Length: 221
Image (cartoon, rainbow, N blue to C red):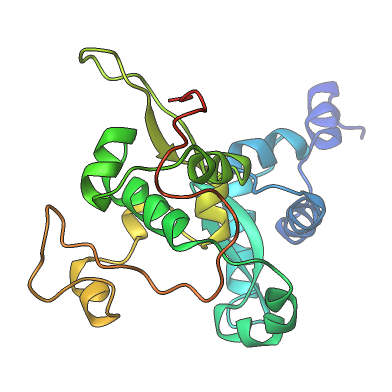
């Protein structure tokens, strides 16, 4: 006795097994140059697939492996396990370090975003050079935010998904807290100034401009 037409149609569109869905998601994430959201993954899977469940199974499978599955700004990506970072030090040494000015500026934007240029300068106590902001924009760790509804309507700066991805954060809420920063020596125990930010340690500087702006160059922001 043959199946009814409706039954045959439902069987022909049956989704793959969860094991197969897990393999598909694994392939998508390994081949993607950027983190993918569950919705983006599900759109690429066969009809009826459950991307969220496949991601959960995959996360368990890669737990405590050399490569782990993490969430970055609400999206998913494979990354080297944090405790194995020492294996990549040889590659890190070939990269130029950010200057002190760039690290301080990035830190202020990350913790107080959206932040205007004048607000960054107020916290640092010195003028922010065009080169410092240009460098962070070129790295795509910050971007322009909405203009403030204040006289002059200054632009604001906010961090990006690329910033979260680079530092392995799911969101800015995962940034170290006040007590953690104090324990690491990045904040004064007795804050001085508006936010008590202390100079952050940086090994090498890159030439991203002096702190004082060049009077002969037009300001971009």
